[in-house]
Image (cartoon, rainbow, N blue to C red; front, side, top):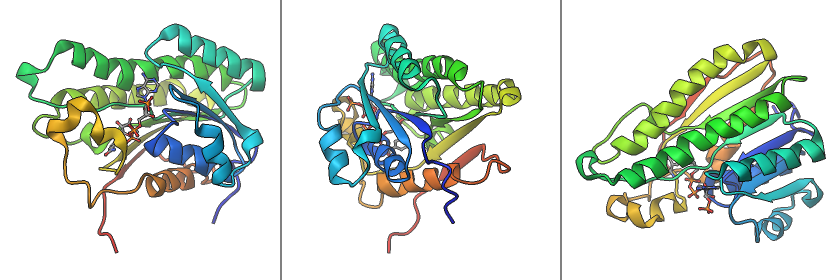
Length: 242
Ligand SMILES: NC(=O)c1ccc[n+]([C@@H]2O[C@H](COP(=O)([O-])OP(=O)(O)OC[C@H]3O[C@@H](n4cnc5c(N)ncnc54)[C@H](OP(=O)(O)O)[C@@H]3O)[C@@H](O)[C@H]2O)c1
């Protein structure tokens, strides 16, 4: 049963322009939260939210390239100015670049870590001071690749393992502030993640993959549980489609 804990919460979702982040944005709006959608492409977000019957007045869209530190600083200054707090940060933005490690371009490896790891750390560092007065939740979207490494996924998996390791430490470090750290590890989802130019050679058959809406709903249901429960690491593999 829904506990209604989202009402008037300030939820920051990175990478809200597509895929899982977009589904989280719609789901949180529908549950009554104020959603701050942080993404590079913000143009169609408001109209798509109206279409999904969310309360558009609760949506704030902020353009941001998460690998540009000054962009992230500006965005969190704006959030501070508008709301004075963050209740939940969902570090969702991520990219997938794949290939054998021995020939993997170092520039691509840096890019993976810049988006999947350093941007999440930077957002966490800016969000924590806005959470300490009331507590809050930080969700780091990892992947099953954060647990299981496959051929040609080594560098991508490393960026996710790094975030998982940082999540473990953050959980201990932020406990005194009542800030919960949830590592969310979904399996394959049907999103544009698999359509990146560099991912072309690695494109799997996505016909059995999960839909981002169901993966988003599951996460929001977990976050809606009473605070007496502390979900720490949730891994969701795809089940059978019926
Ligand atoms: N799809 C899967 O099978 C799968 C499985 C496990 C985990 N995941 C993880 O789930 C998360 C969401 O991925 P998705 O599947 O929903 O893929 P997606 O549709 O490609 O969404 C990723 C989002 O991240 C944003 N992003 C990338 N680089 C950015 C940057 N520098 N600044 C701001 N935003 C940036 C993208 O924005 P743009 O539209 O501007 O590029 C996009 O909206 C990622 O962390 C991914 O690693 C995905």
